[in-house]
Amino acid sequence: MFLHRGLPKGKILFIGDSITDAGRRKDKEEIGKGYVKLIRDYYVQHELQAFICNKGVSGNRVTDLADRWEKDVIRENPDVVSISIGINDVWRQLDSPGIKQVLPDEFKEVYTHLLLETTEKTSARLILMEPTIIEEDLQSEGNRKLAPYITVIRDLAEKFQAKLIPSHVAFLEDLKQSDRTALTTDGVHLTSRGSRLLADTWMKSAAGM
Image 1 (cartoon, rainbow, N blue to C red):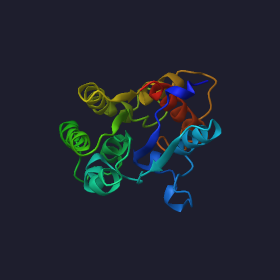
Image 2: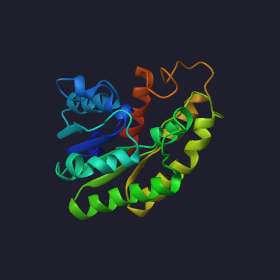
Image 3: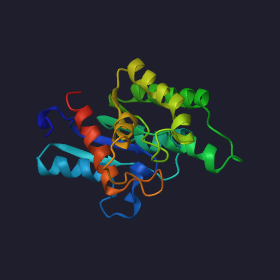
C-alpha cells in the first residue's frame, strides 16, 4: 500500500496528547495501543530501519509540550519529530471553561517557539499532524473551534518546511460515509478503526519526505 523506501528512517519521536499516548506508559514497550503502535508494527513487518519513540502524554495541550520539550525532545536528539497537538487546547474550552484557555494566538506563539527550538538545537526533520476531530459530527462545536488551530498548524508546516499530515481532513472525509463504523469511543479518543485511519494517513503523507 505504501512506498516502503519513502518512509522516514532513523529515530522517529512521536509527541502529543492522549491520542499519541494511547496507554504507552502502561506498556512494557512504551509504545501504547494506538496509531504509533500501528506505524511501528508496519516498520517491523517491512524490516524498515527505524527506532520509534512515543512521548505522548494524555491531557496535554501545547503549553504542556513546552514544559517538557527540552527533556522529551531536545535531549532525545531524534532524526524526525512528529507532533500531534491541539485537541485538548480546544476540548478544554468545552468541558473545562473555568481553566485558563489556550486560544489560537497563544497556541501559535508557543508552537512556533517549539519548532524554532527544535531547528536550532537538533537536525530533526519535522512532521506536523492536524488534530483529528471533536465529536463525530461535521458541524460539531468542537470541530468548528478546531478550525483556527488547524490553520495555525498548516501555516507553521509551510513556514518551517515540515511535512503536514492532513489528519483532520481524513477524519472529516470519513464522517461523510454513510456505512462507516465509529472512529472514536467518546468523540475524541480513537477506536481501533480510528487509530488505523490515523496511522494510514500518517504513512501515506510521510512517505517521500
